[in-house]
Image (cartoon, rainbow, N blue to C red; front, side, top):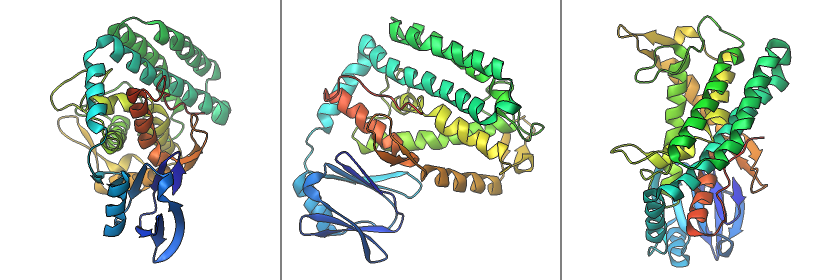
Length: 343
C-alpha cells in the first residue's frame, strides 16, 4: 500500500475499503491498517477481491474521486466515478496528438529515450553483478553504442528516423543478450526474436512476459481515462493497443528482460517445462506457466524509489504511475513526459 502524490494505491489483496467520516479506511481481516483523509486524494486504485463499501463509493462520486478496481493479478475491472469531469477532454487531446505526426514524434521520443536508457542500465547492472562471468569489453561497447544513440533520438526529425535509431540500439542490446544467460545454456539461448509463434524456449518466455506487461499497461491507461488503442510511436491498426505498446517500451528491459534472465540464471525453470510442437512452435506447460505467474506477482510487490517522483512504489504500480504522468503531460500539467528511468 502506497500513496503517490494524490493517488492511493492499495495492493493488499484482502484489503477492504470503508468510509469513516471524511476518511477512507483500509481494513484487512476487519483490522484497520491505514486511514487517509479523502480531501487529500484525487484517485484511489485498489488491487484485490474484497472491494469497497457502497458508502465510500457514493462519497467518492460526490467528491469527484475516481475509485478504480483491479484484480490481484493487475487486470482492470471497473472504475467508479461520477459525472465525467475531464476524460473526454483528455481523450480528445490524445487523439489530436496521435493525428499530428510532429506531436506524436515528441511523445514517441520520450518513450524511446526511456527504452534506450533502460536497455543500457540492464547491461551495466549485469557488468556490475557478474563481471567475472562476462566479456566486459563487449558489454561496455554495446552500452556505449546505446548511450550514443540517446542524443540522436532527441534530434531526429521523423518517426521513421526515430524507428531506425531504436532499431540500431536494439541490435546492440540484443547482440549481447545471449551472454547474459549464465545458466541452462543448453535449454535457453538467444539467436534472434521469433514471435508468432516463438520457436525456442527463450522467445516463448519473453513473449509470455511481454503479454503480461501489455495487460498491465493496458489496464493502467484505461484506469486514467486514456484510450489504449490510440498511440504515438505505434500507429493506428485495427485491434492493436498502440498506446499500450508505446508505454511498454520503457519497461521491456528492466521489467521483462531482467525477470526472464533471473528465472533462467537462478534455475527457477528449466527446459523440461517447454513443449516443442510439429510446426516448430514452443509453448510452456501448465506447471511452468504457474511458476512464472507466481514469480511475476512476487516481483511486482518489490519496492523501488520512483526516479521522477522520488517516492517508494511497488514495481506493479509503475505502469499506473507512468500512465498518470502521461495524462498530466497531455493535459498540459507537465512540460514534458518523464519516462521511467531505471537506476
